[in-house]
Image (cartoon, rainbow, N blue to C red; front, side):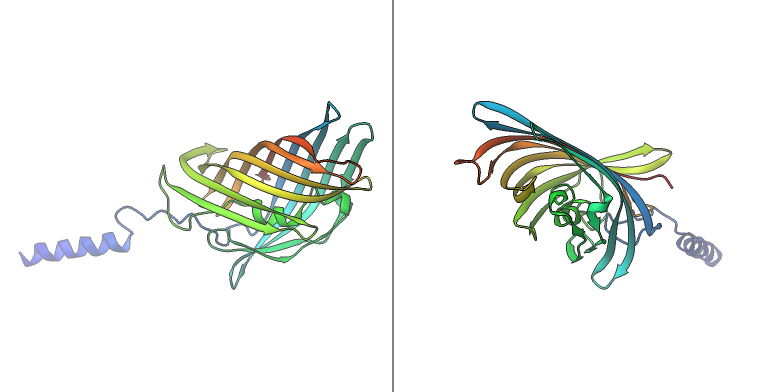
Length: 273
């Protein structure tokens, strides 16, 4: 009997040493990724319809950008640096003609920290030309580029919520409430990624400058989209968002606010290694 007990003890020790039994899934939380320097390709499109004097005028916005993103450990979480490497953006304005912007409109890096669940603290912002600020708003970029995470291991069907509110340096602010749901695993390019969906609402006020005219804009949006997350690498692989809603604009040239409608899509994808 003593020999049998010794065998059982030896087997138990061996299993424990080799990690026997089910492994604990990694937490869905921000940590230093296995690749601390990556690039993301970002695309945005928007159609903004303005009702004025019985007519509907449409602003078409399209932009394509590439950001070099670097991660480093910080005392309060993860330090993130976004550097705009390339930008090709156009705002088609009725009657006045298109406005175009490139990366020369932005000088410097956007630096912020992410807590374990994605809490954002701004460290420094780039200098952005006034006209281009509406396309590359640094506060909005810092708070919405990466998703909120629960900070714990998750299973299919798990949910969490996040509320983000901030004020912009140029005037205005934003309050966004999102509800996230884990859909499950999906294979993309041979890699197993965690598929997460989200829905929510966003309220925004903005002070813009367009071709020398100051514009105050308010917007109420409904959002939905998804995130693909690589748990092994600790990286967001894809984020896609669709937004639509209504609002109003006010300029010194008009006696009353004009109603607006918005339909916008935004995506960020990890560039191939």
